[in-house]
Amino acid sequence: MPRLFNDTLEFKLQGLDPDLPDYAPQCVEAVLAAASEAGATDVHLQPTGAALELKFRVDGVLLPAAALPAGVAVNIIARLKVLAGLLTYHTDRPQEGRIVRQVANLSHSEVEMRVCTYPTLHGERAVVRLFAGAGLYQHLDDLGLPDNAIGPLQNLLGETSGAILVSGPAGSGKTTTLYACLREIARRAAGARSLVSIEDPVEVAVDGVAQSQVRQPSGLDLAAGLRFLMRQDPEVIMVGEIRDRTTAEEALRASLTGHLVLSTFHAGSAAETIGRLSDMGIEPYVLRSGVLAILNQRLLRRLCTCAEPSERTEDRLGLDVRRAMVPRGCAECGQTGYRGRFLLVEMLALSRSELARAVLDRCDTTTIERLAASSGMIGRWSRARRAVDQGLTSPAEVRRVLGFSA
Image (tube, rainbow, N blue to C red; front, side, top):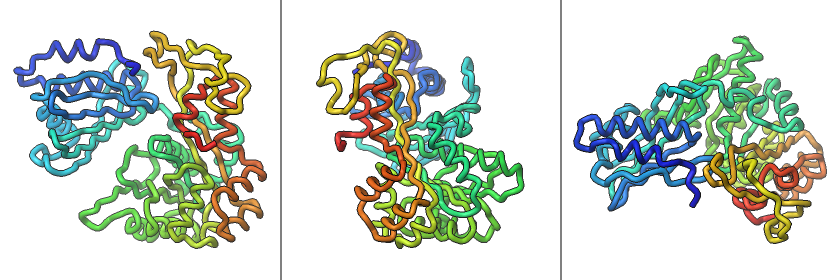
């Protein structure tokens, strides 16, 4: 497996003395700093019988980073829990907290992190999610959305009612896009609109938005939070995620009563989002009248400049493309062949009469997707093939992210 990291992290960790009282703080500091410098989105600390394995998720791929002696695992996890404000003596239950730390020698000096612990056979496992620092991916223009998606989306953010859903699988950047939309509305409104949110958890603080977090012990879940927020005289409501029928019904009810609703939803495509909501039991007329648009997105790794063209047909992996670039690997990309990621999106608007009729008739996902394409929607596969033709990514990366369904 390619390894994006040199021996610097392991060298630093090996230079620390486990017998010293400040071993755990120094170790955690070194790991978090290395993850930030590598551009990792997640740090996995997995205890096994032999070691505490460290892995970084970079550009969507999990890569090994280092390994620590099994005997220090308890102290390392405990140190993370202290930083996140968690209870160190609770090791038999999941916990979640946040860390905000300063990072030197980076263009963005502040990195926000979410820590989640979970009990396993060999001890507590911890995953640290690192969010983009200040100044990164803040606004829609920063995300790299194509012109035929960002223009319509910006127009829809000016609407006074209806729902805009950002869908995709886990790790596709949905929340980042949602926050960028929220900042865009707050910037335009300049305090003249009432913006609120209910999230689980609040991942990033947004100026001008009254943000609330789910508190299950007190009965404040997403659906209950939405019902209470409706009495707070909101104009724009952001729901962190639609997970179940109750939350979907409350969100779409708000969109039908003079509120602009923004939320995320797990689905493989824009058309599949309609199908899954319908399967949840949402009435077709509610979908037709309540949903303004669905932005479905994926993140694909961008080829490094070391990539080379391939004339072999098998390297195209069955994709209908004119040419194929394949990753080679160099020192700059840590021998992975890729550097960074870009968005692959499709945007489905329900303003077209054919699509509206298909939704009302409970047509299947395939029919809705075909009608959307005939109405001008550029689908994810079309954009993926274009990205391969332009040398932005490889057929292997398209298949890794989108699979073999087309």
